[in-house]
Image (cartoon, rainbow, N blue to C red; front, side, top):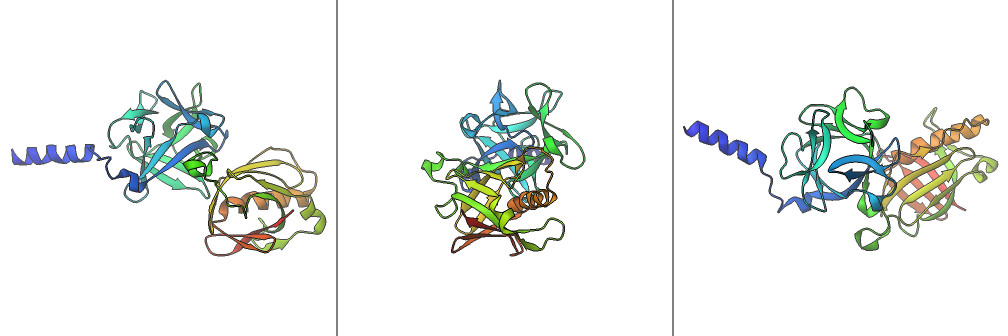
Length: 286
């Protein structure tokens, strides 16, 4: 009898998560499909990557649990996101608690890019399932295009968090690439004057970045505070650049941007470093 009661209490404890202390371990975020560039919104209760901007997206509290486990709480109604809805294991809001289907393993892929794995069935969350780009925990293997999401801090979007900018005055503006870690060797390489002048990186106060290094248009989202730097995996057009040097710079830049975790300013230059403290990108004010 006592064992049965203890078991019931254990189940109840696992099923119940007090929301009183969650705010200290939660961060307001938006989810965005890294593949399509669309933000995750809610349609008829189901989560789908359909919103063109964060203003149309579903704002979530990302609640840190043990280790690499997280849960997502819908800010507007304080319900939790649940996988396993219906036979297709779709994601939806509305759950009052955190159990297996509401728990996800967070897999970091560099910068803002992450994959999410359902703790309940061990499947990766995929966008673009069925009609309407619905999210569902259905994929096996390594995360690929539709299984990769940018976790965008709400503070990285202009107009959120009391209107605070995502980047400081020192970072916003127009830049050119002075040096970049070559993707082939990893060595920091100085661009020729002609190649450097052909690059342009525009960073807005809200953290949106658009760039062109001579061929494709590149976009990303940036969050910067003091010496910390976080950038989403870049999204770019798919033109084949006839100039191989330009192509190499482009590939090196798109690899370095999300790999950087630290930023310092030296005169007219921004110096971006990776987690090991190595300088991998130097931008100069235009």
